[in-house]
Length: 171
Image (cartoon, rainbow, N blue to C red; front, side, top):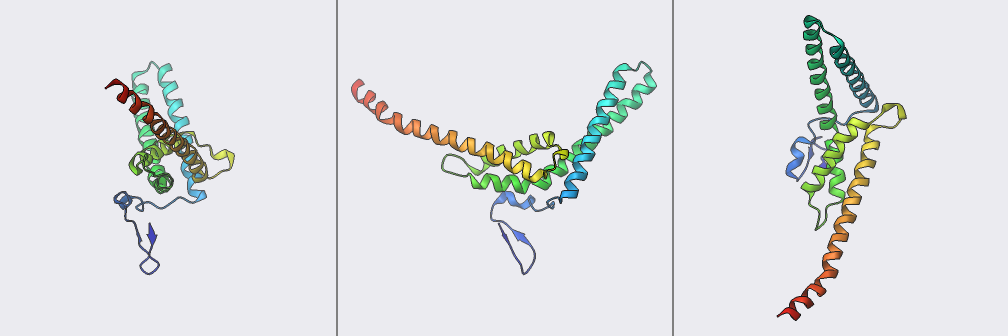
């Protein structure tokens, strides 16, 4: 990825990069706004669901169903904004761990799954930025993947002479 200072347009050689720059990274205030709104909507959704279970009036149930549908849709829209705004971080984390045994696609997929889980678990009250929280979680997970892939590779390499010896003795 490179930034052209002349045109102000960011370019990328990877095919996945075409949509990475569609949404800007969020500022601290933007992150706080979206995560607070997300937390509020989740609380309202839970309240609506609890009220729905306790209500026998069909008209009230219909209104509560409509309110829960709206809340779910808004939650999904907020999650989508947060995911799209942070996909660049997932791409950057995945690129750092690409190796012979780990492809970029596999790592990017894992980094995206970590992003989805991090959005669900993040708490603004702790005082950290989401990007810091997510990058730490992604790096920790991807490092474990690299260690596991490396140990599998060494197991295969160390087992190869024994396997060849067994083949030679059986023929």
